[in-house]
Each structure stands twice: as structure tokens, then as C-alpha cells.
Image 1 (cartoon, rainbow, N blue to C red):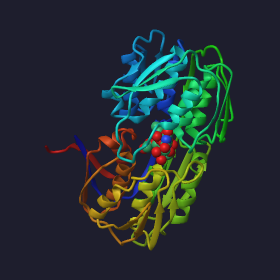
Image 2: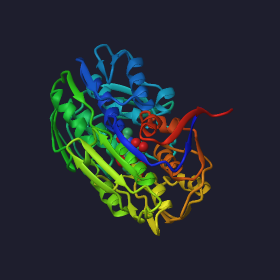
Image 3: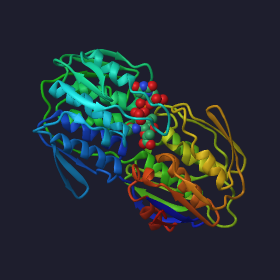
Image 4: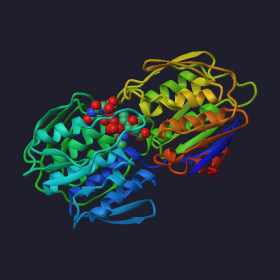
Length: 424
Ligand code: EPU
């Protein structure tokens, strides 16, 4: 296992490029199963999770050909309509292959995703929606086994807003007979990016990006070429890193209009942000005269409100802010695992139910901490960049699931950060 070793206190200067979005790439890769013709995906982030999704596809018999910056996928001969436990257990988004298999081949089998660090995360809405389209789904030996004699359009109102649930049902509906309406749909930009790819493949989807998506089923989908949208959470994580350390950085390939809630909060904290169509510049004082950041209270919610995937990073900033802030997590019930680790660095945080009350301190001091999930890891890296002395972030395989070469990008900006093997 690897860990990151960070010596805090260095300001960040320079320019880096944001990678393609993990949470857009995963459903887009799964969508390749909907067509026998090639899907070419550009700006694919090289991550543990995208590799897992490609492994699921290749063990099904799908041809994949990687090239610099992307992959070409052809699901012509799909031999095994199954996603095995060994792969699914490492990534819950694996469930996204079920709907496409069912829609195109009338059958599919996916291991039930196991427990997860950030809460129970049920998939009942995915199952109910596919059943409403005519599928029968049973649990057999730990697998969801789905069958359908041709899916048919349905009027679906999900009980809660679910991102992958919306994406899953939207994909299945592209090949269902007749019209599907998804109400209470997730409005995340990744849903729109997926809808763009599907429409390029010949699907008839309108309303993606709103809470009502209408899909008119078609008989077959064709191939397409698509460039994955920039990763808004990676972007936000780098914005917070500069806020934490001070400095002046331009992020290329970043889209500010997918980050409005985050940018508002960073400005409230005292950071300067400018943006153009495909770049964001972030600047924060970094010399000894620097004033501490202002505390910012946040409440996570569905897009376009403040994203749960940026909660841990803002908590790290609030740890050294000039005052007290409240962070309420409304999406996942167990997403405060970084609190105890931040405490090891000297942060003062109390948790009451789904709210963390953070009393800003003047400084954090380096220690060994353990990453517990992907975004918690990003929060700990930011805390390490702030802390005096050396911080070791253990178990960064979580970070590698969702950030492409984070330490290389931060080093390029002047951070003192290196990867090393954890001693056994
Ligand atoms: N939920 C249900 N039943 C369902 C589906 C969801 O009860 O059938 C609940 C969940 O338990 C949760 C809430 O609804 O309390 C929202 O969950 P959602 O389904 O939206 O989450 P997700 O689709 O599993 C995606 C991202 C997450 C991100 C969330 C929220 C992907 C692959 N994952 O998860 O990303 O936190 O939306 O925005 O798109 C990450 O990248 O670190 C990450 C965890």
C-alpha cells in the first residue's frame, strides 16, 4: 500500500490541467454495452475506478483499445452477461452495467455491491425503476439476476434524488419500447454528459439537467465519439488546496459553471476566483501578513447546491479559519470519518447528528492519518498541506480511485508531497 508524505506550509503557484470527470466517465463506459458499434471516449481519467469498469467490460467479452487520453470500446460479442463479485466489491458504480445488459440482451447478472464506507447506499431505486420497465429481478447467491422480455417505457418517480439511479434508468430506457419519464431526476452535470453521449449514439433524450427527463426508446443505438466533461470535484479540490496554502494558480480545462455553489463559498472564505470558458484562476494571500480564512458554513445537497463530494475538503479549510462554522451532511449518513483524523492534526470539531461544528484553530500540526474514503482522503491531503511539519496520509488507494496523479499535480505547483510505500 502507498501513502503520501506531505510537508505543509508551501504556497502553490503555476498552472495545471484538470482531468476528465470520474463520475461522468463511469456511466459513459457502461453505456458502451448499449451498442454493437464502437464508442470512443476521449479525456478518460486514468483512475482505479475507470480501470475497474473497463475490466468488467473486458471480462464480458467487450473489446477495449486504450490510446493516449482515451479508449475505444466495442461491445460486439458480449459473451458473459455478468459483473463478478471480485470487481463489483471494489466499486459500487459497477451496478450501472445491469440496465444496459438488460435493455440490449434481455438478461444480466451483477454481484450485489457490498457495504460502503460512506453509509448504507441502497440501490432500491435502480431496481424499482427497472422493474417498472418490465424486468424481473431476483437475488441469487449474492447476485442480482435480471431478466426482461424486452423493456418497455414507464413513468418513474424516484423516492429521492439519485445520481447513478437516474443515469442507470436513463440508459435502460434508451432501448425500451415507447416513452419513459423520470421525475425527481438528478440534475448533476454528469447526468447531462451521459445524455449527450447517448443522444450522439442515436438515443432520444430530452430534459437531462432538469428534474424531468423524457426518453423515447429506439430500436438500436450506433457508435459515437465523446469527450468526457472536466472533473468538477477534482477542480474544487485544487481550488481548496490553493485556498489552504495561499498562492495563485490557473486550472486549465475547468468549467466554473459546474461549480457555482463551491465558488460562492470560497469567495465567502476570502479567496479570489476568476474564470473563463475553460479555465479558473484562484488566488489567495500567502505571506506572513495573510489573514486567516473566514469560516464558511455549508449544507450538502443535490446539484446545483453544495456537493457532498466537496464536504471533507471544506472541513479541512474551516479547521484553520478565523471562527466557527457548521457543516451539515444531508446526502450520506456516515460521511464524517475524516473528523477523527483531522483531530489528530489538532483540529477542533464536534459532531452532533449530521452536523459538524468546527472551531477554527491557528495552526494544525503534522501527524500520521488514515484515509477512509475517497473524498475524506482529499480533505486529509489539504489538511496536510496546511499543517506544520510532516503529515503522512496512509491508505491512499482510496484517493487513487478518483484523483489522477494528485501528488504530481500538487508538486508541479510547489507543494512538498511525495508518494512512498507504506512500511508493512
Ligand atoms: N439512495 C437510496 N436508494 C437508491 C439510490 C440512492 O436510498 O436506490 C440514497 C443514497 O443512500 C444516498 C442518496 O440516495 O443517501 C443519494 O445517493 P446517490 O444515488 O445520488 O449516490 P450515488 O449515485 O451512489 C453518486 C456519486 C458519488 C456522489 C453521490 C452524490 C458516482 C459514481 N458516484 O453516487 O460520488 O457522492 O452521487 O452526489 O457518480 C465520489 O465520487 O466520491 C462519490 C461518492
